[in-house]
Image (cartoon, rainbow, N blue to C red; front, side, top):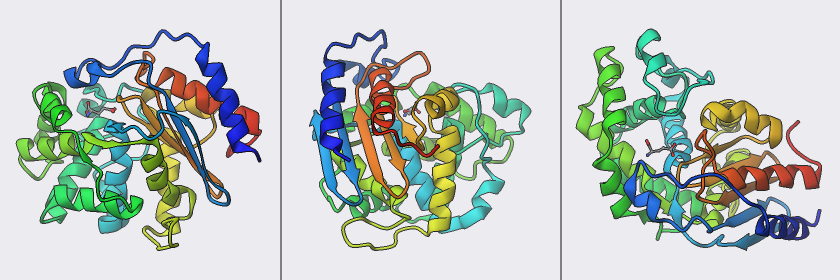
Length: 304
Ligand code: GLU
């Protein structure tokens, strides 16, 4: 498969493609990003790296960090985790409070904000230094110690966390949050503020394509059984209330973030990442989704 030629075709199509999406503005610092940025990176297990555009420029990974947080929590707690958070698609926006009220404070899945906040709470209870552990984990899976948070994004989101604070308060009223609201919110916003490039994110996601093994040395980071579950949750819940549409158009497990990034995997084949800041009305990168749809169309391969 000539992946570079396929990526070149996608790059030239994107050149002339118009979009109607808007860069996320509810975190003021994110709104400053140039909407024209576009990067794509594909890391194939057998044949290495392919890319174009701004694939080495770091951006705010935001909700893509929820996959790493779930990975850490599953390594620590195993299936006990799923007593406190379910694994069903929500069909609601990522920050919705509605379902939580009538489902007694148990979030639908670990990738909506409520679920990710429960995962943050679990990591805080389990770890002595959750922030350091989280960054160390990302350094370990990428082999790159320079990855860090963007402090401006972290501060900016902390000042505008009313909804996430509301979710935490509601869940605490149902006794599904152990630590204090401020501590959980702080850790959650910290993990969302991590910056990575498409290339770095692709390297990190290789473990989900590669049966839980780090690609550089085959070191087993997570068991294949747990990777299977994480990929299943990405497939069914990774795209806010548009997971069905993403499955329909692209056909790969993945996770998006409001920074405009999407990371996806074809298990046994490759990891792929895109970054384009303008978001469609459901909060997913508009051109990023298009590029991934073209990838699985032009290669003729998806998980389906
Ligand atoms: N930090 C963001 C929030 O909680 C993450 C949103 C996202 O990327 O989905 O609002």
